[in-house]
Image 1 (cartoon, rainbow, N blue to C red):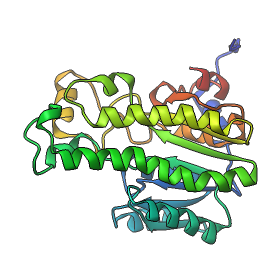
Image 2 (image 1 turned 30 degrees about the vertical axis):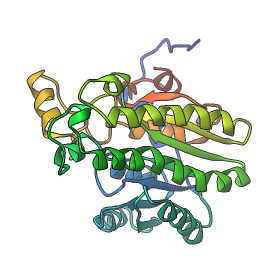
Image 3 (image 1 turned 180 degrees about the vertical axis):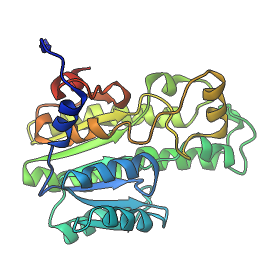
Length: 282
């Protein structure tokens, strides 16, 4: 079981524990890093000393990487255009990462298409599955499910050869996967959860781990559809901040999580007032 401390730990002390996590010498590839959760996670890895490749289908990924470099002078940052639904793009980005930084240790599969994409699709007439644009439906699956697979497929052998590595798949809450009028997004995230569990078993004993990470609610990004944003506001709820998963990600990406494989972490449940082990358990 988890042991609790007899004395309370101050916020400053607990934050120092997170801030003490260093990833110097590690190289991370973050997909969907042009904005939102992906950019926030890429920045947190960079601040911890990792060399970081910002990858995204959006050309603004170059702006994000340049801004990161300005905020962290001397850091190792690289921007790459990548459509994760295209297998050759994923192979190229993994190889480019290795060519640029000499290796690859951490992959964050964050790139994805969501409900907002479906709402904008030309042939979508409503939120129910038979009213959705079939071509757009397939694109969501190709990006979210196949994209995560393609990146991991090319990255895993590199990590296995090095005897250490991290694959972190960004998914969503169980309720979201099953919510009505949320196909194919919910379908795609359920598939990624299955990918995580299967890959973790495949990777057992290699030194490489695979875990899933979720925000724990709707996040204040352009990824949230207008309908979801309105529903959240009407329920009196607030959208989560974009850095909601940063602490949990840093812990998962560090040697402190060497024995964590096939697990699922909720960003909003991370308690900065607790020691790292207790926050992770929570």
